[in-house]
Amino acid sequence: MLPWKRLLRPLTALLLTAVVAVVPAATAHAAAPSSGWNDYSCKPSAAHPRPVVLVHGTFANSTDNWLAFAPYLVDRGYCVFSLDYGQLPGVPLFNALGPIDKSAEQLQVFVDKVLAATGAAKADLVGHSQGGLMPRYYLKFLGGAAKVNTFVGIAPDNHGTTLDGLTNLLPYFPGAEDLLSMATPALADQIVGSAFLTKLNAGGDTVAGVHYTVIATKYDEVVTPYRSQFLTGSDVHNVLLQDLCPVDLSEHAAIGLIDRIAFHEAANALDPAHATPTNCASVFS
Image 1 (tube, rainbow, N blue to C red):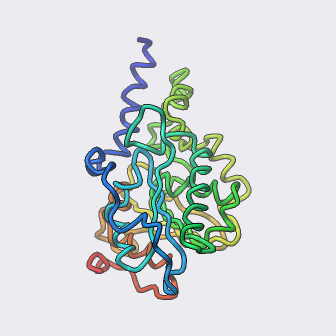
Image 2 (cartoon, rainbow, N blue to C red):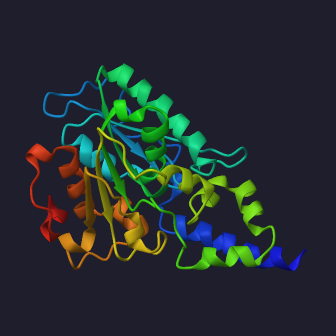
Image 3 (cartoon, rainbow, N blue to C red):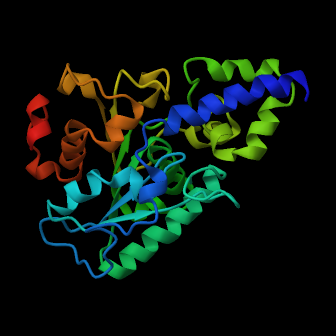
């Protein structure tokens, strides 16, 4: 084995581990039917007229990423749907690994399916990690802005990540970036300075007609630096979790999987007319 391949192996493993380390029991839950969501007979109410589409992160799937947040929304009267995307041949359970622009095409098809089933004119999107990045391609290049009212990104890597500087090592190993692109294109797309991110962010972070909210944590160890998650635009609400609750220690995975303070702020973004203050007590709401 070539020396650079031996060096790349632990780096790749670290990339994988950082994203999936705290994803709970994927093999146990991914095949289980979702409870209370992905109900295509659900009709949005006057109080919540838009269905909510949940977009999972890298190495996650449509069930595990949303075991807490989907029921949280269903209990509040929303029609909730989640999709799997970015599958690679021969890789079960772990998704969002394929080219992100192709994943956005899958989201496009899924949103059309949800709108047709519910009869709604528009949907709202909530995504975690890559799921808070990939829909921006759909909004900007695939006509999604006409079909989406609100987009909430929880710990999104909107401007890429250095993974605490580890991605800066790739140029020192000839062929490493090409190998990463071939093996897991979505990881390569999310590295700071990638061609995908350059195209996505050219001309501005947002598109007109969509309300954007970004919820980040300063303890994020995957999307670094954490402030790179924030968007710039005329209709953007950037939120740091610790500004809402200073003692909240959630990192990258926990903020999307189990953090009810982040959930409360996301719910406020989905229904700003009935928003209530988000603080440490929101964990009990």
